[in-house]
Length: 442
Image (cartoon, rainbow, N blue to C red):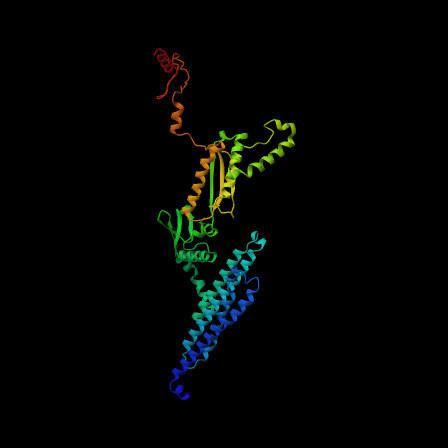
């Protein structure tokens, strides 16, 4: 065998090189199939192993990738007959891989620290996410310099001195590229935007789904099927709303008000209370509220004889309770999210009764269907409570007001004999008297 290798030196080189890579492969298999599995079982018994958010940082699995690279970088020099240049290239690539893997592992540790700290109460007042991002960026910069220096087989100091001389020119020439690259890194590290997210940027007239994220631009397909192209750095420097949180939460907000005519607000009569007591969503509320009001009025004594002093049922308060119970029992409303029915400040358009709740679906068509069904019903039941929705007068309303309604005008100082001035379509006072006289004669 030795004579064969002497006669064919290239065969000895191939065998040694194959044995080296086979050793690295076996070491990688043993570490990941045995050692990592054993460590995972041990960690699984702790509180860390039960937490999916902590497990995704995978610090140990990243460090395990270093072992095969160490075997290759240290064993490549023992391969006989290999040219010096090839040895240098393979060794430098293995070392660069080790540096990159260590950088990823260190940043995974930073991410783990940020996750653990975020769960502490003081994290709300003293967040460290910004410092963690700066530390990660510094690690990546150092790793990038070391990797480039290793691949070029140069000292990092020499590399930095050369880059420093060209820094001003590089920044000037590649300004947009550098800004876009930094923005891309920030977006990726903070998980701000992903393809498929629904985002909205009003100042750029963008409201739709992200279809593409490139180095310089982000493409958004608006709901009218137009395409808006946004410079990627705008996502960092300008306000942007991402609806991914809403979609992942499983609920979509309804925030809409009924404007009630304030002239229709009054106390309920006993007959109305009895009639409303047969309504399903008021059957529990009315007796409970009646007991509360009776106890309150009883404390007033004789002063309760004055209706201004005592508490009474109002139609708007009873309607508000009905809406609240109706929404809490609606199959399309999310029971685990905020639900409010509240009065807002009165406006010239009436008293706003705002409904604030969440549907149990985020699908647009289903959301609109649920919201429309709710308000269809509420507008229809308003008269049952003696209430009416406010609406500004329309042309028909003004036409009804002007039919047979005389319009008085100020007397002219030089035409005192003018009694009335009637607008077209109306009957003035004098014309009305003439018509009455004609009717009597006939």
